[in-house]
Length: 402
Ligand code: GAL
Image (cartoon, rainbow, N blue to C red):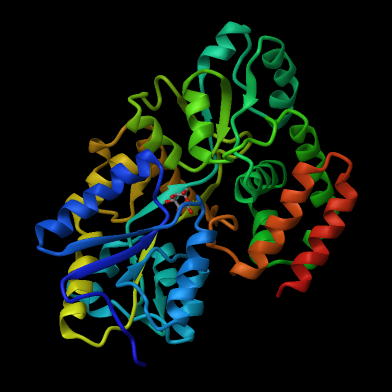
């Protein structure tokens, strides 16, 4: 394939880590690569969750000019491997013993035809509830432990001028609420059936109607559609005490860390209501593109090695909010929320309740994911769509997309 790649010593990397906390975490990687005399060419595309980044990347690939590496994850890794679009990193993986360092449950998602095709950096937990305790002490109410308690306490918060939830108005952020409510109210087996197996009966069941009924109540207590819609703006509202709760993956903790707010103290980290027995995850990974020059190949090897380097995984994940994917790293260097995440990950692995995030591309392919996003975005923005209608729309859209 006639790939045109970046200049000899350039390392061009596409990613969507553009918030303050994400950038700080990424700088740990940039520094290490620059120390190896590689010039970091930043190819950053704004948009949490990465949908926009993938679109831009596709056009670079179609024009025969891919970057050296890109933040591609989940189901896209296998799909692009099948199409011969990405280069494997198997030699690096074998030379550096990845088989023994990575959690068994996640290895196969990084492989294609028995070879490693993606280099992983971390594990993010998605089903967190980040709580600013001050609004709750102000209204003298406990922090909700169930979805119903959340719905009940919301008007009391609103009466005192607090926004119950901090939430940006992008489709993937609304969809995070869907994942959390679905898991919390219907359990891990139903989550798997509906969001991983795409079982039509589950998607059109009364259980799904029940999920939308809870979401319909939450929809009423959401902030108005925000102008910038970004998740990190919502995190700042939470830190400022304007909002009481944010449902978000732990990249929100990276943001808190950046702004000097102490996770677990200033902002509490709790599993989303009724979510404590299961762990919804996403894994950030980098894939490499086939390259014609030996020099670019060597750069890719150095890059993949660095991503799995133990010191890097500590430094990066401390800032990113996630936990290392290497299983030999001591929890001691991490804050109490990351330690809780590590313990919950192990516990869920044992109980078989580790669940791939649909919203963050771990469970289904992009087309299916888009059909979820479209139905959910519409539902959250239109108060007149009821739970029965939304369930029908979702089952139809998902069926048509795969
Ligand atoms: C996720 C990604 C995280 C974080 C988040 C918000 O998909 O895994 O690393 O960046 O998007 O941008």
